[in-house]
Amino acid sequence: MANIKSAKKRIKVTQTKTLQNRMVKSALKTTIKKFEAAVQANNAEEAKTSFVGVTKAIDMAAQKGVIHKNMAARKKSRLAAKLNAMA
Image (tube, rainbow, N blue to C red; front, side, top):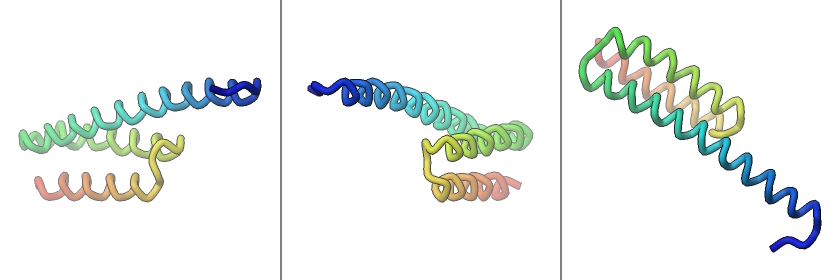
């Protein structure tokens, strides 16, 4: 356990940021699952609208530093390939 005041504060700040990052990641995974469910159901219209939301969520997560920008690009590319494979 930390004794120094600044170390105690860093622990609190880290816990807060960890919770925030976990929230963003969880929401991202949920949106991706919804998109993939639409693709599995062959629902092209829902998949297209869902894809816009997924790309926005991925970009925001990358911008906040929750995921790496290359990982974001890779995820978007693979999801776009799934969308294009439907048509």
